[in-house]
Amino acid sequence: MMNALERRSTFALSSIFALRMLGLFMIIPVFSVAGQAYEGATPALIGLAVGVYGLTQAILQIPFSLIADRYSRKPLIVFGLLLFALGGAIAAMSDTIYGVIIGRAIAGGGAVSAVVMALLADVTREEQRSKAMAMMGMSIGLSFVIAFSLGPWLTSLVGISGLFWVTTIMGMLAISMLLLVPKVTRHHKNFQQGYFVQLKEVLKMKDLNRLHVSVFSLHLLLTAMFIYVPLQLINYAKIPLSSHGLIYLPLLVLSLFFAFPSIILAEKYRKMRGIFLTAIGGIILGLIFMIFGFESKYILLLGLGLFFIAFNVMEALLPSWLSKAAPIQSKATAMGVNASGQFLGAFCGGILGGQLIMLNNTAMGWGILTVIAIIWLIISFGLSQPRYLSSLVLRLPETKQTDEWTSQLLAIRGIEEVLVMPEQQVAYVKVDKLQIDDTARQHLTHLLGKEVVI
Image 1 (tube, helix red, strand yellow):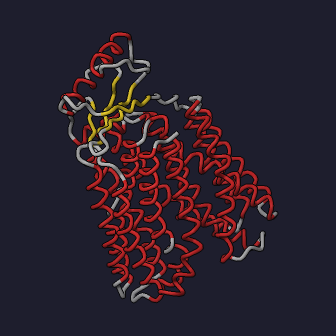
Image 2 (tube, rainbow, N blue to C red):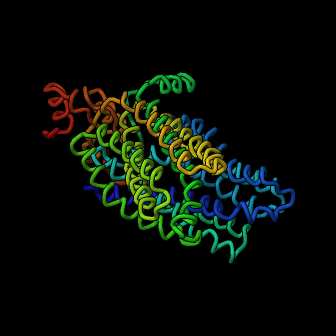
Image 3 (cartoon, rainbow, N blue to C red):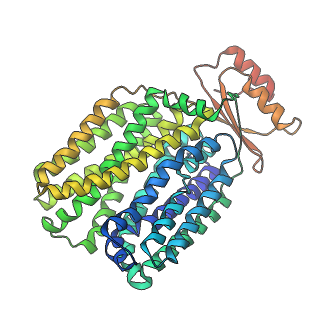
């Protein structure tokens, strides 16, 4: 079970993700029409205004995450959210499409997705990580559905500039959520190296690269599907666009009943690789249903339901697996590369979704997406089971300096990282049980003054 600190931190950091995504997603269903009112607007520039956010996100995730592995994560998140809010304000005050493009680019400059995930990994124990990541994944999916429902309604009330102001407000609210997250000081075995060497080392790890391919493929398929499927829901299921949010929301909620047990199985019984590959299989099965049954309302919804279940499992497992597989001293860097893959996947998925509509062959379109998912599955078969660490929750000593205490802990074989929360007077000690031997247990018992069960 999560402790109170983990629940509070997970809620706060998930809310930061959800508030950012809500502000961004509300623009998507309305801007292709409302954006035509801007001076100088053309279809290409309207598309650029929507997509430039993802492009700057993809470019800047890695620099932000490299810095986050050297310095405190919370100030970086605040800086990124301020950029996000500033970009929304610039877009809100713009009369030309170029001003909107500049505002969206600046908002995308607050590329702190990976930093937020790294902070969540810091403040949760290894055994609770998948649950925390699952909640964050759910918050993203829920914000997507709510945004597509709220966007048109809010635009009718406050206009497109008002919608950008809502984005700014949400950015400021997200900053306030950081007050709920404890201050964390990270201590680990020091492997000091240059930024480019650190990035190069991360990019050389084959399993991490397979996870980067996975997040790229997952968000390519998701974005392409959300561009491709609305017309089919209208034409074949006879569901009007204004009601699509009412379809996505129940499917998302239903998927939670399947996703959470899968995540618990993956973590508790160390079946992460098997659940991961099964989820990709679920995505393929959902797409196959849509190849052959898109003309049937119920088969189309069944295919969407399978896709949502598998997507939510993957959305939770990917960051959890990444945090296990990444070198501890380069955790944010690995998450930054992964986040860049996510945004590039969404960018490519948007382009692909438009091309699929132009095919005028619905079955072939779903077939192309299925082939992409099958290639993804083949690549993922090379994944090895991740390393599983355990967490000890210890009170900070009253008689020793914290830095001296953490140094002594890190000198013990099998102790990988110590995360200190001074305000709560506790530390999370991350342990590799396979590395702990009798000598290490004796050293740990001597240091703590009591025997610890590991």
